[in-house]
Length: 371
Image (cartoon, rainbow, N blue to C red):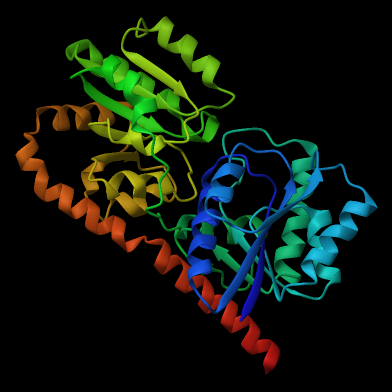
């Protein structure tokens, strides 16, 4: 039995939390692995999902990245001592140092939070400096979620050891509440739905989607933009929609636990992110057969979509408009064959495959210990 504890900063909904949840669900099915989670902060709107899946976890109760108490640090250290492997998914220098004192094997998964498209604070820059030394000298294995993430990590942190690449897997245990989404479905009616589902933050580049939709909608009055998610730029994009006179053609739902119900409403899914580390959400929409469009500067996203259709990777807002025109005019019967291809590609990124690859990394580490 391999004992692993995953370390996350919080249970605030995001791709990392979703990935760790799916990984733990698969690890619970595997008699060879005993896993648990330590949340450093007790904040988050995603705890219910971990509770529903009966995932074991504890919280350290930290309030911020630079707040700590010796009592809480001692509690964390005692937790780490119960396991053979400490698997970090977020980096915090103090928590990492505590793990080092236990002499346990440390794995770090780089999920690609590199801070693109924004100015880093002094403490973030300091954190990156410490992280460079931690990864180079004190981490037994590094895993990246895409080839894009791997290339950035090696360059930014001057990593000499070869990181593993293990793509995130998309699970099938989606929370669903069709009744909750019914009001939005009635509001949309039979209009052509262009949608996205993500956090509304800089890296997601929702501005590119809104700009392209404004052009597309001029010629297609029955089109509607469905934006599912929340984030600090939500207010800014609401104003942008009003400025472009699109308020009757754009729907902001805010955060939704049952995001899958909204993805099903979309005729075309667009993820306009720039330098996205992986893009699990694209796997989710491909799995239900939806046409999925991304940008060529989307980091790990093009790696996925090129396996389906290279023309669904665009280089500009104009290119996105052209691709939306294509799907608008496409006969649904003509799209059935492509729908099958999308679903087949999505199957390659299963949570089962992800879990097997992580197990292989764990076993390699522990074999080295026994040697």
